Length: 365
Ligand code: NAP
Ligand code: ZN
Image (tube, rainbow, N blue to C red; front, top):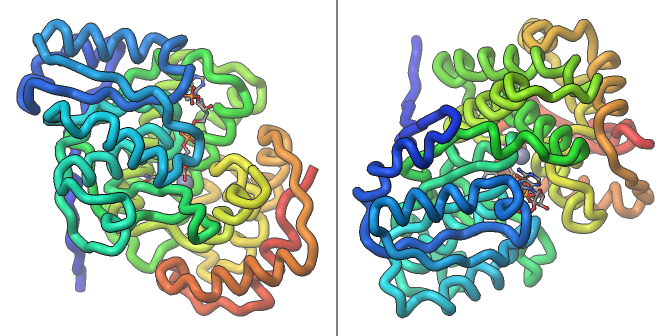
């Protein structure tokens, strides 16, 4: 019997100049906006300027918080809130990569509830002021997910804050991603792939999430040769951005699974970018998967014939350096073994030995 519950409330608007062309959409969200963005890139790729012009054309007053760092911290989220809480902010326009969008979602919770960041972590089902998202990387899909992943130094880890904040609108304009450096392009593209793969090979996968995942995997597969050849035209950028947003829709239904849980310490402790941290764990992760039919379907959708071929491609396109000691591997395996959510999303029983093997066979350079 078929059984599922599907909801994806984010309106998706795609196309060159879509933010300015659809600026009337912004009117629905109020008179005072906080633009949340990173330090630099949105000033260079045109997205911040477009955001300001779109707001100005609708006579919406805006303030800018441009201090979101990579792997944003709870402290940054709270700083943005405290600096702007007297300004009667009605909504947030997040412009940037997953870090800016994730931070904006957590800020939106603080603005709505007028609470501290610490309180936000201990309370459940909190509402948020509206968030609109303009992604400038093609990887996290945060523009179509309810998740906000923050760095929590108190807990010495990165994790989802546990609130659900779907952006109201995602404006997808691939022009902003055109000049993204190669290393960020590939790491974020691999992040999108891992969302599609972990959503597809997931105990919560259903007919609709699989339909989306299959299309996303196909789009990603079409980008592999251009990524290898370092030839990322606007058409390739569009495919990657769409694959990434589709991947967000998939993990909104399923969540991610083992590689995401196992990649977070590589980012937190070793500084490996998020997408790369997941991708280098894939040779081992895919090899423990026992449902070969579904695994082979996944590989054929991206146009590769084996896990080895995929590993070679990731080795070629990802830029990183990481070495793990046996003590670190043991500690990280203990961590994932206590992560019930990620274990539950993996549809098969997994052993300590298998998890250790995933770290031991990760791609190294
Ligand atoms: P990011 O951390 O947002 O940005 C990485 C770097 O790319 C930054 O230096 C940023 O510069 C730069 N950048 C962004 N857009 C650019 C562009 N168009 N051209 C050139 N440089 C650009 O990277 P991300 O991979 O998109 O986000 C990673 C974060 O998202 C992680 O914290 C991860 O855990 C989280 N995540 C969230 C979800 C979710 O569902 N919510 C899913 C997966 C991952 P600036 O700082 O100057 O902007
Ligand atoms: Zn991810």
